[in-house]
Length: 263
Image 1 (cartoon, one colour):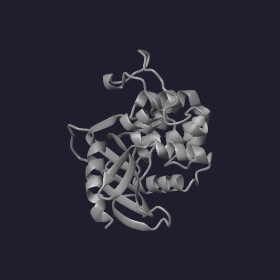
Image 2 (cartoon, one colour; image 1 turned 45 degrees about the vertical axis):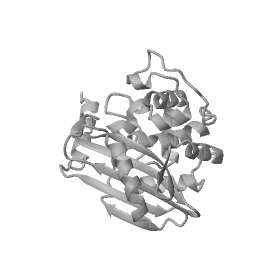
Image 3 (cartoon, one colour; image 1 turned 90 degrees about the vertical axis):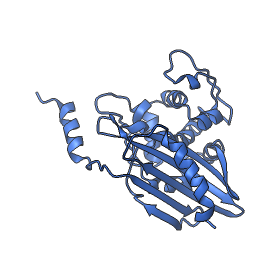
């Protein structure tokens, strides 16, 4: 009898695009209202795992499902049954979750949502490749789909999603979209007010195993100055190990560059 799981894994490896050893970079900025491309530099159509940038669509799901209530509710306590670094052994509410990028809170949210609702939401939101199956054979999509296993999204798709969110055009409750946008961390870039979410991780293979010499970082969100609104995504994938998470590095680079990119 054929081992179907083994065959599926082999087919996935065969159909995967070859992993490039070259760095990847993209910055894409759209006018938030018209959708016009204001800047698009680098490789912006290639998909990578969203990592913590997925907290934005996950917040949309959580508010629409009624699990998240407002910016401070629910406030969940960390307990010994939750896997987390020591810095996250603390009470967490929606605002802290986004600000400190607390993974255990994301996993509690998807657990309460359930696998069927989670998969339905990702499909309805048309988020990236829509694949929440997780690593082959591990049945971990509910907790790991966005962490370098199955779910992937390109910078072009990231800005399209953010623009739909800001327009209230996602197929969920409008108040859920407004709450999800409101809890994102805020920054300044010159005279631009910026809201955005970082993501840090590594490129991975079809089994969800990381290439530690291929770190990646995201910064995704929007910026406003007066009546002007833009949405942006910046991605950086390096070809050597990094001693620091790349998400914050990418964020700081975009905040530094934005005033010159949008004079």
